[in-house]
Structures are given as C-alpha cells and as structure tokens.
Length: 191
Image: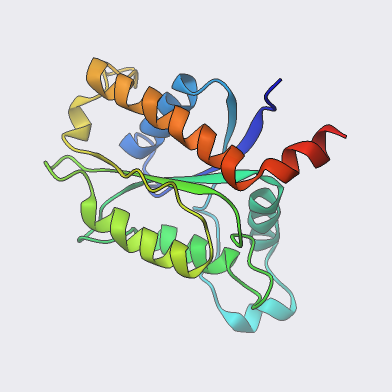
C-alpha cells in the first residue's frame, strides 16, 4: 500500500483570485494520492538576519510547515521574467538560519503559469536556480502553462481538458519522484 505523502504548496501570488492558487487546487484534485497543504506566505516579514535572534512567529510557523512536509510544490506566476518578491522572500526565510534550511533534500516540483504564451518560463527557471542551490531535488519534467487566464471558469474550476490531462500526468510523475527521493521516510513513518 502506497503511503499518502504530505506536500507543502507554495503559491507565488497573493491575489485573492490568483490563477496560481486555482491551479494549485486543480492540481491537488487531479492528484488524489498526495495530500496538499497550501502554506501561506503573505504574512512573512521580509527576511532580515537581525531578526534571527528572536524570529517572528510567522517565520517559525512557515519553517515548521515546510519541515513537516514530505515534499514541496511551487506554483507561481511570472513577474518581470522572474519570481514574485513574496516567493523569493519565502525561499530566503526557509533557507535560514544558515545550516538549518527546511528545503534541504526535500523533493520538489515547479509549475509556472502566465497569461502569455510562454507560461512563465522565466519565473520557472529563476526559481529552479535558487532551489538547486538549496539542495531541493527537483522533478526534471518542467511545467509551463500559458494562456492561464482562459483555463478556469468564473467559479475557479479548470475547464481546459488538455491542461487537466497534462496536470494528471504531471501528478503521476511528481508522486513517483517523491517516492524515488524519499523511500526511507515512508518506511520510517509506517513503523
């Protein structure tokens, strides 16, 4: 029997009607063998090493939620050919204090989206560059979703069939990747 893995989901947009948040929820619904938990990042104070002596409660909460997860999924828009500042801040907060990064060794995947045709290619690759440095073993299959504003109806439901098929297949690959990277943790948690 395959264990249900807990996946921390980091959504790179704070907007209430965020396409990235809709996409994260749709991906979760299409990948039922994983349990997805959206970890909020909008309340994280900007990283400032001077605060490490008495870290803000939001940092402590965020770091614990990531540490408790079996894997991490990033779903992000592209801002100016890169990641949103709030997402970069979350990455920095999780990477500190030095030597205690919550990202270290945690299997991950990246889905980027944009209303344009190239689907957030720039944000996807900038994010991957940071995550590789932080030793997040990333699923090598890349996921860029263009024309993203047309993928959902007014209720936030995914209406594009080919995108649904792609996400379902990506979920299968991500699930297999988590098991490849973390087989020992499944045994330890089952015991």
